[in-house]
Image 1 (cartoon, rainbow, N blue to C red):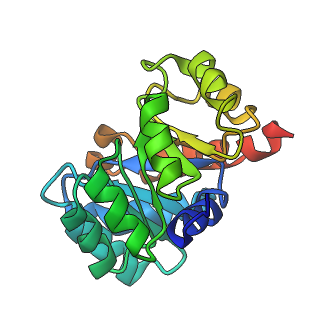
Image 2: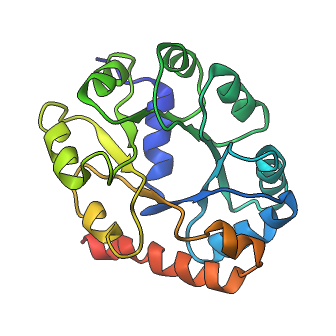
Length: 217
C-alpha cells in the first residue's frame, strides 16, 4: 500500500522531538509565552487541541510570532477541522480517532496528518488509506505497551505516537519501543500551569522531556 504525502510529512515532524506537548489553552494571550517556553526547552512541535474557543486564536498567534515553533492542531474530528488547520497555516494535524470521511479528506490533501487508532480494525482502515504513522489513543487505558506490542506484529510498517496516560514517569518506557516515533502528553504544560503563567516550570519540564531522546539510545 502506497504511503500518502500527508503521512510522510507527519513522520518527519513527529520525529523532531521525543515528546509532542498536547496543549489545552483557555486564553489566546497565553499562547506566545507558552510556545516560547516550549521552544527554549527543546520541544518545537506543539499540538494545540481544538477543545476550547481560544484554540484557533492561540494557534494563529504562535504561528505569527514564534517562528521556531511547529504548530499543529489536535482533536481534529471532521474534514472541516482539517480544512481549518490548513487555512490557518498549521504544520500538522492529529486526531483522537479516525473516520472514513476524515481519512479521505486527509489523503486528498498535503497537510501532514496522523489519525488516531485504538483497534486493529481502525489501524487497517488507516493503512488502507495510506497512513503508516498513527496516534495510539488513549494509550494507557487501551492496553498500554502490551496492546501496542500486539498491534505491531501484524502491522510492521506502522509507527506510533502514543498519547493518553503517558507522563514523565513512564514516557521513557514508551519511547524505548522501536515502533514509537514520539509520545504526546499534557504533563509538559498542564492547563493550571498555563493559567498561572509558570513559563519557567514549563520550560524546565520541556527540557527534561527533550532529553528523553538520549534515553532511547
